[in-house]
Image (tube, rainbow, N blue to C red; front, side, top):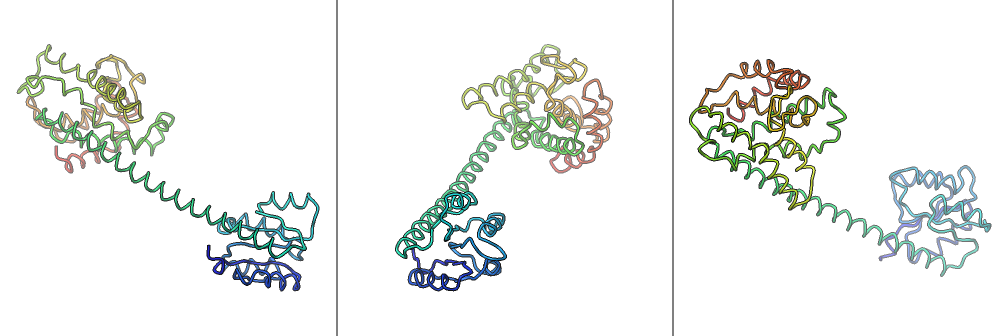
Length: 359
């Protein structure tokens, strides 16, 4: 520690004390003799010391008042303050330390003792600063590594989702578009404050990301059914419907191997519930109304809308206006009526997303 570069403020209304203190410290520190707390605060606007040696008994503003003001200032509160005082009672010492002073030295004091105390405290402050820098750097490193892991996880999940999509030739771009629709709905839901208690429990970082796996169960469906050029038979559709439960099973397996996480919670609810209907006529569980998780009710709108505006082997793509009307016609039967109203407000954004991501 280069003590000559360290700045010490010596604050005392007694000129003799200032002179004596400066003589004691000047060989090792850059000492600023200051005759009052008021002048000290004026000087602090331009110079930040490494330590303040502060007298207590001073006119206008005493040492206790001065340290309170220092500690109330976010830019000054970390400057270490040592009281140098003629008060020798323990109550005064306790008060000074309670106000945040690092030490309380009684006058008269010996130069070697004062210098050693200053040296020790400055060394301690220096180590605290170094530790803070290390911790800040460590936090930055952890944040960077975490971001890298999240990016890698997202890339892997996107690859899995795309693998499903590539097997289903008719649904190119479906994953990206449904994520975008879901984001639009969630943003509007937050803006309106509807379902606020449920939304407050969501981990927004992972909610939209988890939507990529809503159809992951299709990975277990035969290509003969998945890519059939025509409408499915009743038996084939029954097999297709199992993709919702299969998807939940895949996600549960991920949980088993990697511990439960907010991502998998959202993913399981969406995968298992996005084909349920408000009136209870959906699948796989036939639950209805608010029994269907809110995430799944939102995804139901996004998923059906995208199916409507996309080409399928058994149908042509509908216009965005036609799709909007069908969603609105499903209010209270297929879809949550509150969410249909939300959808109607942002339908133009859905249509823009179709153009941006390709329908």
